[in-house]
Image (cartoon, rainbow, N blue to C red):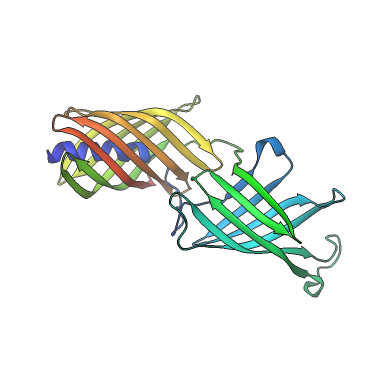
Length: 272
């Protein structure tokens, strides 16, 4: 039973391993360029630090001249289930000509309204703001510029809430992940999960996708050697950095002991 449990965890971890990046300490990391594909030329740049989003709006005024607004939006307690909400004041900023000497005294910041960033998933949000009484509502998504390649060998760990039959527990294991990322975005992960000095090798396969800087592997397949365990997993919020990978995951696996599920999973590792 324990070996099966560890194997399942390993599989999930492998999939998640897909790429661990720096997760925001309070929420999903919403740092990215956000836009509406049908409205190319308009956008919002979002930079997250802990529980604050600094947002730049790239818009145009009534004369079609480019203008910009900024807001520091703070995480709101008591957000509805399935939503992560940030709100703050919105400012119009003007300043000295870019081709001349910069004088900070010439910078003017005027509050024009408020802005709310309501994330209804890791990759989509509703951005509502008001400028001088004019309301705007935008359904935005992360803008993709280039796919990451998450291939490499990573050494780290994984943890998740595991439920097998009537037994539930929070598990943690050491992992070694060898990820092959092909040019067609097919991913193969050779995962070794070590628990109580027992090493269980597994293989995770799936197709890599990406929204903004966050990657995902949906409905990946997993198979473990030496243990009868097969299942599917979702690896999401995959973030890659120069140091390593981090991600979140969930999974379902069929074992001789019955059906097991892994939820609230996190996995990551440093690059070897």
